[in-house]
Amino acid sequence: MGRLIVVSNRVAPTQEGRPAAGGLAVGVLDALKETGGVWFGWSGETVAEPSAPVIEQQGSVTYATVGLTRRDYDQYYKGFSNTTLWPTFHYRNDLARYERQEYGGYLRVNVSLARQLQPLIEPDDIIWVHDYHLIPFARCLRDLGVKNPIGFFLHIPLPVPEVMRSVPPHEELMKFMCHYDVVGFQTGADRQAFLDYIERGGHGTASEDGMVHAWDRILKVGAYPIGIYPDAIAKSAGQFADRKPVRSLRDAMRGRKLIMSVDRLDYSKGLAERFQAFERLLQNGPGWHGRVSLLQIAPPTRSDVQTYQTIRRNLEGEAGRINGRFAQLDWTPIQYLNRKYERNLLMALFREAQVGYVAPLRDGMNLVAKEYVASQDPDDPGVLVLSQFAGAAEQLPGALVVNPYDLNQTAEALERALSMPHAERVSRYQDMMASLRENNLSVWRDTFLTDLRSVATAASVTARARQAAPVDKASAPAAPAPASPPASTATTVPRAATRAQ
Ligand code: GDG
Image (cartoon, rainbow, N blue to C red; front, top):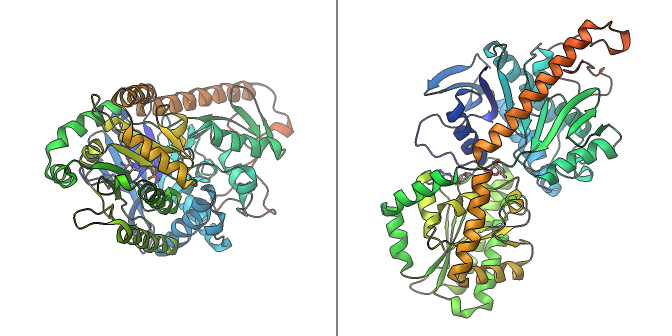
């Protein structure tokens, strides 16, 4: 069996022990360590000129990283990826901005990354591309003559067609997705959004088994909810329970209840609404004053994007306002920390919290929700309060599910979580752990890769059969397009070749 090549915008820090505060990094690294393989992507450095990848071997994983020029970073990463796609895919078109030049940069970087990866690809390799930065990547590799199976997984939501259409090159992006052999989403709802775009837009058809025929391509489209390793997390949460920061937190709580949240500092995570619902709990329940605190850990990300600077300022303002309103000499209602923690320590901190508070306004999956549950003491577990707009809500039957826009409902759920009887907590925890074990990270990876292998095998069998048959002019594959940025204007002839032909 060939190697697994994982491609993502950012390759996680390669030094062991350095915290990687991002779901993709955490999920992919764990999945790759088990199978071994290559992880290709951006090193996080900006460079004067693109150059060959730097190769570094660590255990079973080969890291192949490249730098981005300042212009690439501005247009591809900060621009189209994070100022157009990220907000729109999280239903925040109000925060999205589109610049044609940035989209040009996005296409250029995809072509350039594909060229840098191509020499490393061996015939038996299987290629798994991750996330919204790299939607055109399969098309770019195919233009370079790469024949290997290529799959794509979108870690964030795919919006419904009406919202998707607010991204000016939406149709080209959807066509690019169809150049993969398998496209995976976090939830059934995301998958349905894709199918609705294709079918209602008259671009193609889908069959019951998830095979989509669109724009002369055949691909498999499925929901593959990303998981965690719950038992490994449970173990480390227990083992780190006596570390100094955990003891300090326990001492500081002195019998008070703790509600805990951990999120990258991002507007999709709904942190202001979260603080306000906590405020509502204190406002409606004076009995909780001095008896409960909210600990919000929010490591900053994309801090050079303007919107992220604004949200940071807003949150500091909100935390200050609420603390000013309710704090007592020996009690601060909200502890808001803009920093990263070591992963195992974070899990041990989760175990200290009676309530895990995960209330994003929109989230692909949300691994924090799963990690919180897995970190609990099975004999005395805490309760998860979870937004209905996190993909995880489809998977965690024991959570108290809330609409984060409804501050009263969320405050009531917090109250209920803080007061929940022991037997109910245990039963909800057990339901959720069973689901986490059943859909763990290996299941996510293996289901996706099994589908990718079988779709690719079926495609090559069909291709061999077609080669043996007389080729009529209409079904002959088109000549490979030059390896320049793929079409972004209506004047360029689309490439008709498909793996199935
Ligand atoms: C994207 C999608 C999807 C957080 N702070 C620290 C830290 N973290 C870790 C958490 C968790 C991960 O980062 C965050 O994952 P999420 O899933 O919650 O969110 P995103 O970063 O937005 O991830 C998301 C995910 O991809 C996977 O597909 O679920 O919907 O948006 O693992 O524990 N880790 C450390 N220190 C921190 O301070 N070490």
